[in-house]
Image (tube, rainbow, N blue to C red):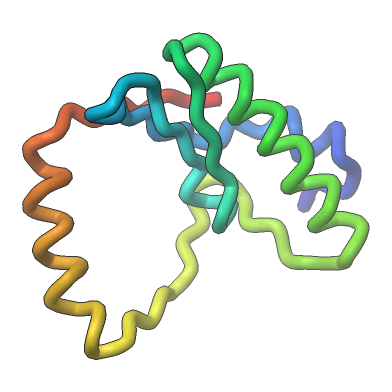
Length: 104
């Protein structure tokens, strides 16, 4: 059965991506929830911030009747032609940075 309440969705284990930033601090995101991202000075702060961002993201989606993907659900993303080369170039840069993935 599909979750119905904010509490139901908050209980789900969404994957969190944690990435150290070159200038210091950490960037975090939940890719299953488009646009759900945050940052923090420390890894712990970044993880606290993404939990708050997740809660707000889910709350707004429920209020507006927006489809909320379940953990692991993938959505098709169309990239405009002018971004294809840039995306591939940025992928090469990102591959040299250590990524850490956590389950929330």
